[in-house]
Length: 460
Ligand code: UD1
Ligand code: CA
Image 1: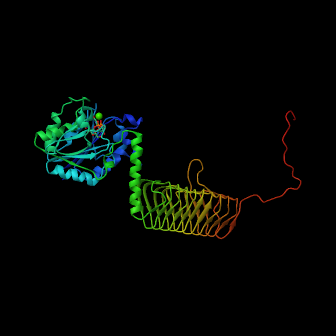
Image 2 (image 1 turned 30 degrees about the horizontal axis):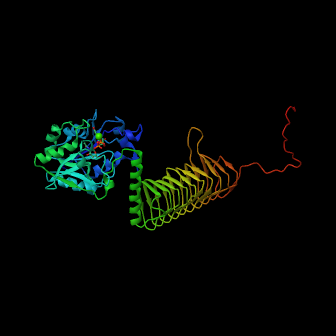
Image 3 (image 1 turned 90 degrees about the vertical axis):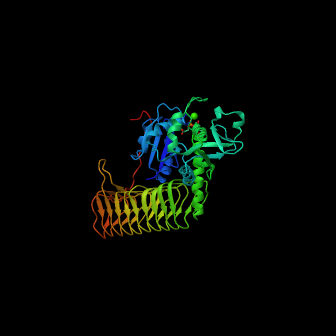
């Protein structure tokens, strides 16, 4: 069994977010801050994960909804040491504890593994960084002779000399549990903030002759915590920039690496091209040679090789075959599967429908709850009337059908193989195969027709 216990501190108020949503639930790249921390925690396969929550109350456990987590309520919040104390009953003596923060979302797994390895050899392992501007942070105070860590001093309690120190405490640490219990019980709140500081265990470790070590992350942003919307948007950009860098390194062509947003996972084949301002949500897979036009939004989509999405298209929870042409301004909604060589053009909405090989709906259509066969041509303005105000019905359009423009297909209805529908028809009954079906008034021209004229006021 893993020795690792992870405690995530997430009880803070987040006053400076000016929001009713608890701070740790604010999204970064489409996922709550706490969700990022939990993903990282889970990937370390710990014995257990405790989340200390308080502000925002049950909204936090409710939003995360994971039965494997241990939720520990901290009310009132008397400091980081007090927070960790609430989780003590869940920290087995033979293990070690990694302390993470619900508002520090992007700490790297490799960075944390280094801390854990140090704690495994009975060391109190701290994650520290050197900052140009260390103000606001706890400072790492080192022994002037040995250079070893002596204590962490909070800014509000620091002397002027200590405030000059640029090495700061990120808060993230790994502690052998055999010491943690004793140290936490000894914490006092005799300081400027009248809080129980977790950081005070550092001086206790030194006093007890326990080794204290500092590890630094590869990137300073791994330790950035979020207190305001300004910090949130800055970290979002850092995250997106990292995503873009990774895509470029894999050979994806981006029109502008600063104008792409990945809110989930984007998996690309070779020679994929992505134009500006595209958003990818959930799990998106773009196979070889796929092109995504500017301003498109793709969510939980799989697009097979050679397909091109023209600008301003929205595709949600759908599968697109090879060499399809989608958009511009197409909307493809959940439950849609397009086979190879399908064209869905401008202002065409497709929902919960399958369209077979080589079929086209190029302009201004709604195709809902439909099964469309091969080599079908759906004329401009064709609507499947799938809803009677209470229930939804299916439309079946078989292979080689030609639907004339501005046709309404009133479901449930089947347009049989090879049939042609004349433009402007309202089709309410199944059509026989290989026939022309029309339903519209015959065109007449009336001689001498005069248009109505506007009445003058007062005239009868
Ligand atoms: C803490 C550290 C400081 C470090 C800084 C890094 C202490 C005493 N100080 O200071 O050395 O440089 O973080 O950002 O640890 N929290 C609770 N319950 C509480 C108090 C805090 O869950 O009672 C959580 C908060 O939600 C937050 C985190 O702990 O996520 C840090 O709390 P905060 O009050 O922001 O700590 P700082 O004063 O910034
Ligand atoms: Ca504080």
